[in-house]
Amino acid sequence: MNGRSTTAWVQISILVAAAVPACEFDDVPPLSDAKGLAYTPAVEAGGGATRSPHAAADTVCSAPEALAEVPPVPSVAPVSSMEENQTSSNSDESTDRDDTRAIVPKPAARSSCPEHMLEVQGAYCEDVMHRCIKGGRSHTGDDADEPEPFYCDVYQSGYAKCFGKEDPKHFCIDEFEYPNQKGALPMVMVSWYEAQRLCGLEDKRLCGDDEWTLACEGPERAPYPYGFVRDRTACNIDRLWLSPNDGLLANKAAPKAEIDAEVDRLSKRVPSGSMPRCRSSYGVMDMTGNVDEWAVNVTLDGKPYRSVFKGGHWVSGARNRCRPVTTSHDETTAYYAEGFRCCADLRLASAP
Image (cartoon, rainbow, N blue to C red; front, side, top):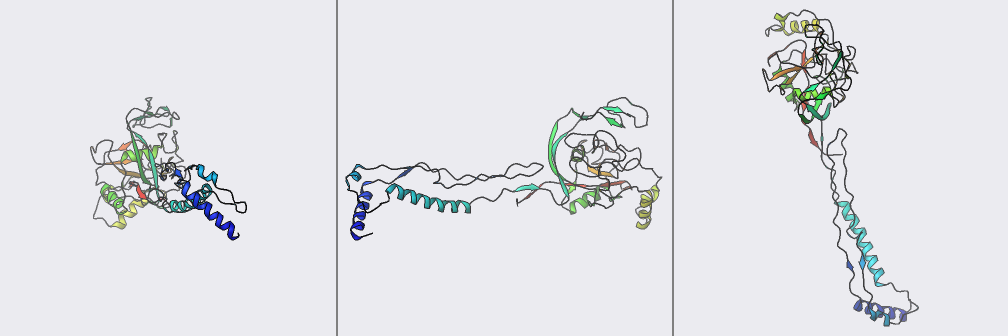
């Protein structure tokens, strides 16, 4: 560019600066927020995108009449004030994009279950009716034709009518019976108090009987963890009963080796998870059969005891359904066919 052209362009620029008012921008939209979505059985996280505050701004400039009187300079291709503003805006936009990336919030915190526990979310119904259509018997073994006899071989598929209020629940439960290890034999000869203590050592608690029932029935409220038809091959049930030496088992002063030997003689436990079809729709294993499980008496308001048993054990004649409870044993009972599993409240964890 020669000296004459440079001088002319400087003159034009001065005239432009004096004659053209500053450009105006529309209101700058606020930056969007990133929010986490609510808890579901598969946790999802979502967030709003961020954008530059200038990205949606419209430049509004007026062209003064004085500018039309300035003679053009053919040897120079001047940049208009509008283009200068656009270039400046683009530069600001680039800077703003970098800034907004720096302030994008971290993913929202989410709730999670401790290791080797499963999440259960659903509505517990306090009073569910199933309809027995085959093999109904009373507790004495006599034929029974009422909709819900003590024993039933086949219930009407999909029929689970709720007659009571529904209580939404969201919690964690051990996948297996204590010690919650696949392939381990469930612990027995443990009182309700001791079960509470052992759960507490792992920052867990005994399940409420309503929580236990929901985890067993699943959202479909099936009478058995695996469905509506009693299957003696799915879970460890209907095994031969042997007469126990109750005097020895109740003797707290007896040598541990003698009690262990008696339990081994009587026990028909199988390793946790060894019967894969004995699985609820929430993925919880061995909820019926194997060992009876201690729970907290919630649905009967702690009467006659704060303790109840759920699920039944391996001995032939046990109920082996999700909903019934046994209330006849107090919290100090410890026996060869009784164990437990733990529950826990959801814990807050940072999303990855």
